[in-house]
Image 1 (cartoon, helix red, strand yellow):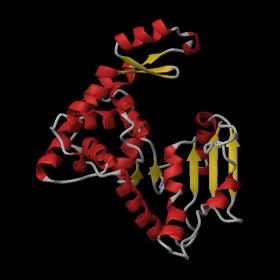
Image 2: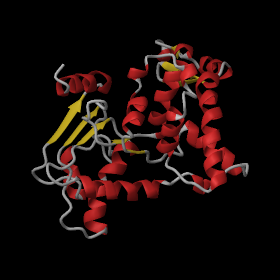
Image 3: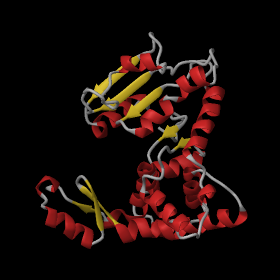
Length: 267
């Protein structure tokens, strides 16, 4: 989808940003736990003791994934810090992926299957709200606390919102920009708010609404739930218009997203 220019911009979490690269460089070291529902607290502790961090049925290897990236990304952080330069989280990741084969020695999957590599090759715009809530974000914070880096070297979420607003203003003319959301959480909440912010807070009355809204989600509608909210609720927040095409696909995104993408790509 990225390589065929079907994606104009991505909003993702810090975990999404880094985990694709971790899989790229440490795939063979991952541990699968199909019986994860049956794990006892002691089983979980044993995984920790063996430097495995579990995400549902998949355990990420700390040394081969986290620390391998840390060694190389720290050099880029430090170089920027020393020279007074500032970048967004994804820009540092792009620099690492493009830095003369620094990571290529570790590749364990076909590079064509890395969406971050595809995005870096295209220099695709990315916004990463709440990046601090990620492994690399935690590591960066630790260097700041130790006095080795300045917090200002990493551009902030507020700056991401300002950058996204400028991007939306420049790209929302004509057919507009569609909003295709996989799952819920901050990666969806953050970017969709750019429209009401521009309309209500910046008083730009002619700013277009999102061109369409489609969400793949298995979240159920419940009181106080945002991820499970039906699209019409977004009308009341100034995110969607009355006539905006709206779709909710209540299913597993790992099944549905590839099917939709295959249809878009005429496969």
